[in-house]
Length: 371
Image 1 (tube, rainbow, N blue to C red):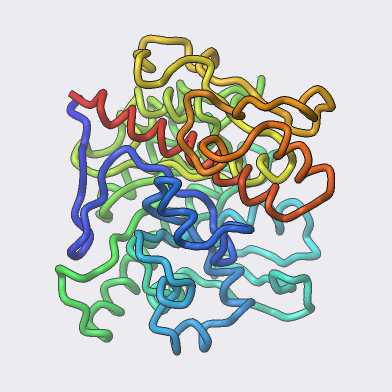
Image 2: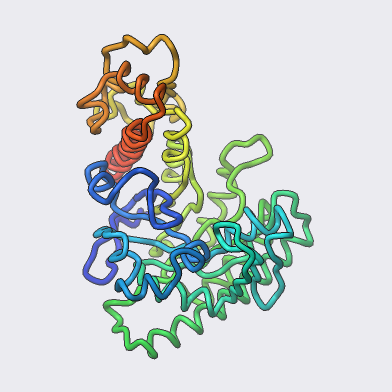
């Protein structure tokens, strides 16, 4: 299968593969736009539910869109809010409820008691108000303990909501007088768990409606906690070759490599930024410029560095000899140990920059391996 190398979004080119870190609330914690650019990051993924709650649409619209608001010159994706069904409502019913009409959140992103109604139509309107480059249809993402009946409901709703999203999207393009060459791309999400019949049903229905790209939705891990590569490959087989595929929530560096191998183009996750703050840094075990990452066991390409270990208190070596990030070029392991020990925010910043650079370097290498 030929691998899609790039797509055009307005005047910008999005090259594949690509990794988008999660800037859920319009920020990668402790970093600014220049930090991200220097770390090789080309795009961010943001969440409309959280942004609708704080700072609110009025503030963002007054700034001319979320990218202007946060001074981000790169690309941006908005997730529909569907993940919040799984992470909030299906986990704790006090956060809201879901029915065929849409979603009601009982709380704001900061925990305040306030109702937010999220229908497929509103999800599209909010995302277009945010003025991002790629928007995603609202989907019903079932919980971890979902039954077969739950998955059937999820697929039915996801298809229906996608149809409503597409209709609202086309309506908004006309209403806002957005020319074809300037429109945001619209992606739909394939649900169905590990059930191939449900995945096929969902994928085929979404393809019939027609979208600019498609996402692998729901849990991406199997029962053992490993990447469910069989489901990943099956979903790809049901989708058009000429459309980008988004592995939502993937993931660890080795999972990105394995997903890339079966045909995915876009990746996002909170892993590198969250783990950096929790004192876990990714490092290369081999020179990434001298090893074929597609023919090497991906898990053996990376190891973890924990900067709070006492043995690093006087270690003058760099964190990763194969990394060119701000941390590795300018500071020692001993200094990073010191920063974490005294709880200075610079520790977060440098560690986050490093982990993001590992990811962006991986993306650079994968692009070189496209035939």
